[in-house]
Length: 231
Image 1 (cartoon, rainbow, N blue to C red):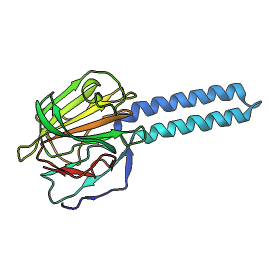
Image 2: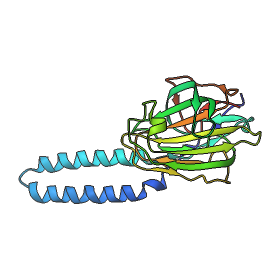
Image 3: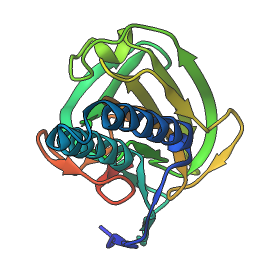
Image 4: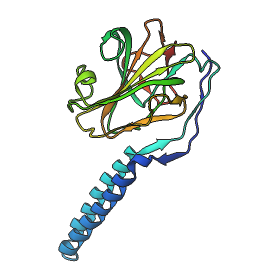
């Protein structure tokens, strides 16, 4: 396996968080101004505690929208499958995929908690054959049925060697917006952003049965760094 990466330490905020962070900042500022006008100077401790709690919550929100700049480097990039998301592997098994392939595929699922980076990266290079959004429910993302019942976005990428890889972004109990940048006909490469999911969620990969899987259930992944396997 060609060796993997050069990790750039620079971190920025994802553009999907701009409106949320601005609105959140205004809400925090106005709320604290109201508390200050009511409690200060008679109860300064209330003012300080409120300010501390709201600041901590806002920093959690800022942390959610962080977007590390990463570059993946390997000698076998045409055949490598790279993790599309930060999180933890919750499924590695052979399943029936009935939305697009209608046959048996190897499924690898990554669950993202509230504290993971929620930017999603392209897992393989190739051409986008399909990009489709599905409305659905908002069950807990770790449930097996979430992959077919929750709101989701499905992308199929054909690699230069003719392998079809399906990537599915799945909303969770807290997720209320899935953003997918890839459209049918697009050329895509590893290192590019595929999309973003707001709050807890998961990303599923459906791979050919011949794919060599290099991860196992319970393993943590880093988007655009961890090697999932090879085609």
